[in-house]
Length: 287
Image 1 (tube, helix red, strand yellow):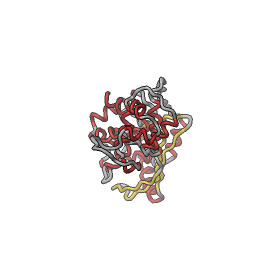
Image 2: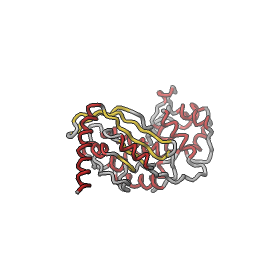
Image 3: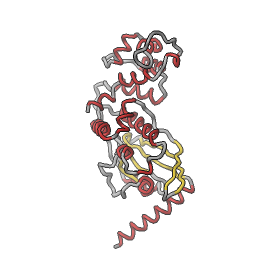
Image 4: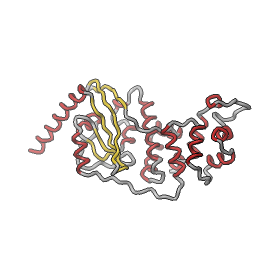
């Protein structure tokens, strides 16, 4: 479990962002021999307009309570992108004496009907720790999921499935980049719930079971989920094209609705397979 707690450290995140920069990249003159890569602490402090000892205390995890303005200055100094900036603010607040609220895994009938109505566009719902809670027939076909029986299975976790060989066709040529992106998004979600035992147990599991996770997690990369176009090839579906969107419900902030809006050609092929599957289901119910 030690690795999981280390992963949430504000100091570790600051250090990882500092070490990826060079003085030349931030407009400073390099001087002296550098024993470690990246910027020195005093250089970050200079760029952020704060004292070196104060910044050092922040990196070392001492209780210095940085203001929002100071954090923004540090974000500018470290050239953080918008996702990393949000992550920095979340980590800075992680030490505040506030208990992580219990996860809300409620899936009401209306949400379930909505997910099923997305067919032939694949759609599913993830809980806080990326457990699969609901999915539709198109998602079963595309992602090789078991038939949805009205309740998610505890072993069906989106990150666990992605790190495993559950669907070999997903291990395409760009799998290394994709798994890095997935882990960066997982870390971004983890920062919202720094004391959640579900996250901590999963990180401990993945550190032990997945070489890719062991390699990527200590890099402290973070990435926000964005809408984007996905293309691929499947022996059953042929060429595929989807617009991937992540939706959140204000009434259920723990839940993420993952939708894959298919192009007309892809949707047509999926519709045929969805209809075949529903027909077989109806036959079995009549027997």
